[in-house]
Image 1: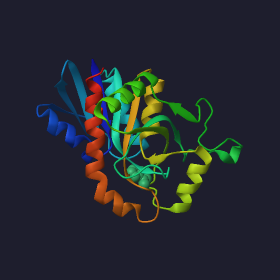
Image 2: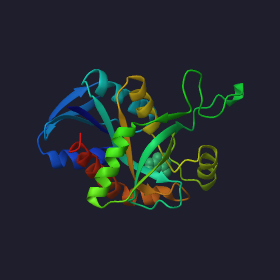
Image 3: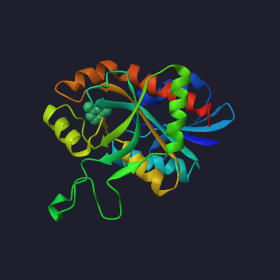
Length: 228
Ligand code: ADE
């Protein structure tokens, strides 16, 4: 099977390229896509660069140019839910663009005509993730992720987004990846390991924990491929 594995930042994909060892780099649309073999799968790996636009483009390229049949996203997130700690794994069951705002016209935050507010991920992939977690003896949480083009490091912004969407964590790519996959009919899985708690000084925790948390998520996603 052709599986796309996408991250946003170099730190999120390097652990996989290091593990795979051999890969071919293809430069396309101002980015690099890495083709590798894993078990009986063909993998397409890339880091999109940060944000909703970059991640939308890379997702579309993985599907339309490289023919990815499933899309697994790996990366880090800022926790909103107090039960999530640094290094914990969160699988998104649904995602929302919290900064998509035409409330001036009476629409709810996160909504534009033609789309749903919440974008669902693939249930079968999420069930496989639970199975992988059980077999590895790892804790895996499921929840809602809020996506927007801002690094959240502010208690009041965090509280507001959590209250409106009941979001468990925030990041900057998941909803756009999930929406692109849903639109192009490709099953989507979004995994994040917590790097910070999105409050005051979250940028310092992020810098300290991004590499380790990114690795935790990447290792889990590769293990998922064993079950596909
Ligand atoms: N990714 C990891 N931590 C984040 C945060 N606090 N805000 C947005 N994206 C993140």
